[in-house]
Length: 203
Image (cartoon, rainbow, N blue to C red; front, side, top):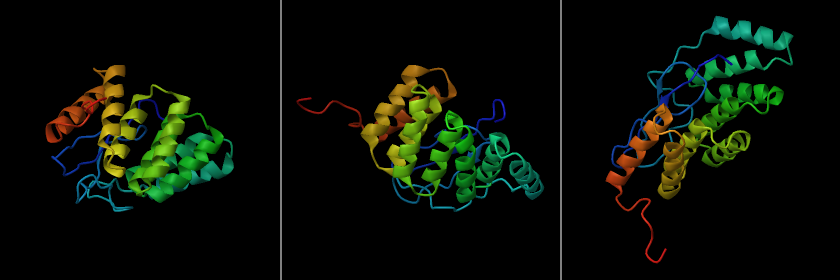
């Protein structure tokens, strides 16, 4: 794992033009995913955007060689996963994140990035299960919580659930990049859907 290698992928949505969601934990470069064509829809599976990174095949070959020679070393596997993630080749990234996690199962960043890959391949339920595993490692991992909100909102159309988890992110770190992104998400969501997050009658 590279120190301070944090990726910000951005998903847009049309139900009030909510945009600017942070997603991902490990990759170094910002990445923009295609905006869903319909409200609260997940991105099309394995559809690379114009901003997908070009896969460095030479680096991939070198890392695969290291991984083969060092079966107990998670780092080359994680780096391969990151390269495939940045190239938006999510099925390949999934395989390498899984391989890395077999060696370091308590790596919350790897776990969360695997969950993000599941989301990007239209596997919202599997994404939520993986992100829940990340929270079992670190219940206050704000990037994981932020991503859970994204999956709930865009993958499951659960705006109430997204509101609750984004509020957790704000409460945990209002001045962090994740807290600020969650605050923007909440403000935009409430503007587009004034009743979202409001107490229900009789509740």
